[in-house]
Length: 264
Image (cartoon, rainbow, N blue to C red; front, top):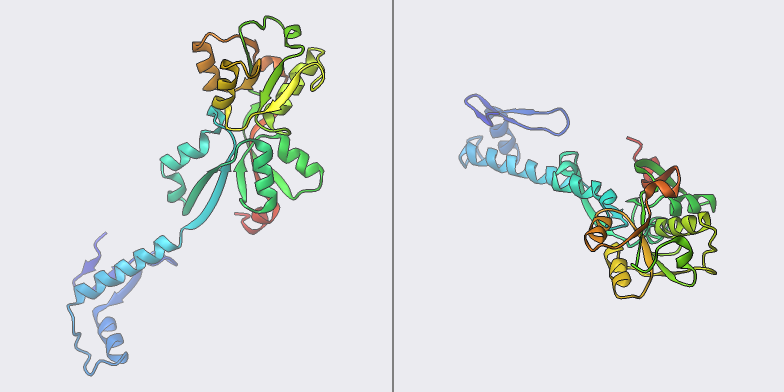
């Protein structure tokens, strides 16, 4: 687009796409503001450049700021990072800050307290919060199966070998906690009685390290941590198909007021 024209100028205008200002109008406006003569005291091109810079500055300020939470170091949680790296948030008028919250239960607590308005999260925690009366809604599903594998230490050969052992989860009430309890129950093992379940915050890589140093006998995890476990030749006692059918593994949840204020 040509910003300067011989008989006038065209400056982008947020309301209708462009604002057309003639040379005469610019000079007259300056005269009205107090200049003793309608003769322009500075080069017209300088003022037009200044006006353009001011418009650009106001456009930058107009970008809506948004804090977006994510809750696991896993491939299923890559969507917001890909979107940010591709500058798609900015292209749609959003200035997004991504905040890591370890585990779906912690992310849901951050939602309910108003610290963040929206998050990519595990399905178990927001559903439980909604059933307790929280104004939280799931608005999209990224991964809709319980996409976990149960990684165990080499001495674990069958489910019964887990009796008396410890399994790691991120936090109680999170997806990893739900998946661990579900697979144990399926195998006839009682969570917290036959098999201890302990919280180890810090992400799936931290829990994999706990398995390697003997602190726990296993953990549920998703790619890319499962890929790393295979390279380390650690056994997989259960795969995603073993955990059951459809499940909101990685939905996007948001506060009710946030959704009502931004229906578009």
